[in-house]
Length: 208
Image (cartoon, rainbow, N blue to C red):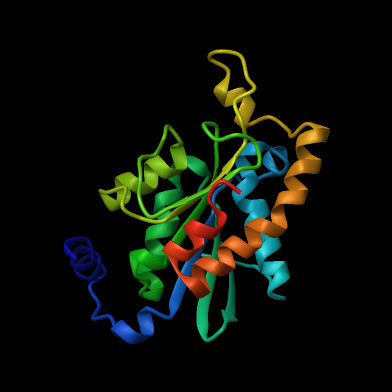
């Protein structure tokens, strides 16, 4: 409750509770530029690209990122790919939450995770950054880790001290094939978050 009051005060607008509960922000984290397009660190971009395509919408370049707008079962959904680069993701997320009066429980941040086996999903309502620079920046901007996130496991098949090279590296052929197979499940999980809520989505998709 205190956190929600902080957001309302921070945004400087009186939020219509009923309308705001029907509006969602789905954020895929990644880095812009062709050199990053097919890296493990950009799985957030890949998932939201597929999600937007599935729901027959498209992105347009707007302030601080590419944004798509769509409707799902009466809910208004904004999908964001920040163009601020990973380490400054929080700036874009905060801007669009303020711009659209979106409540923090209706935010879902999608990212890669080294600490989860390849292809496994983990959806939580709060947590630490886990060393992920995108999540770290969002946490610093929010001053809390209490926001929903969706982690896609990329595994930890790297030599000690080579984490950065691994996440910024290209998928292997085997990984890319497996990742593509997992995308439909990711789309279903994001859609479930919007239509069925966090608890139901966690129960259905965590560990899948």
